[in-house]
Image (cartoon, rainbow, N blue to C red; front, top):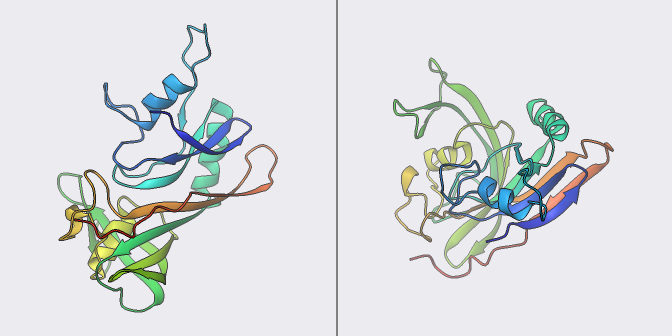
Length: 219
């Protein structure tokens, strides 16, 4: 299946990553990188296209993802992420509410002993990194809650574990305590906006992903 391109700049594109696939190529599995290698190959060329992974979204998460098409652009975009010059906004659906309609969550996150999950603590612990996000309630879907999430730090599974620790696991995220399934390999978390400076022109760029219909109660 082809990747949906939301925005094309010089040396990069922003795609709408589908939920259920990983970002980086992994053997013969369906991934963003594997699809791009096929989709961007030039007719008659024996050289594979360049696919630079700038950042990642978890397998069950969908939405805006930047992919570089050459090494120089990859380096510029990597630097922008490292310097925290990229704004990211997510939409999350939960079955239970967060502590307030608007607020912040601060935890200290580390990986578990297998490295597959994040563990959150409200107090500093050895090996854990401070993690901060802002949230606000933007609507209701049936009996559920829709939150706009703005992560200030970028930690492993940050939004997922912080919302769960605050008592509001994301629907479908059984890894972090959701009692409801959404779709196979999918959770109700979507990267809906990215804001960044074009790596070559410096022009401020805002890219939004189309809304997903979460109006049907997940089974």
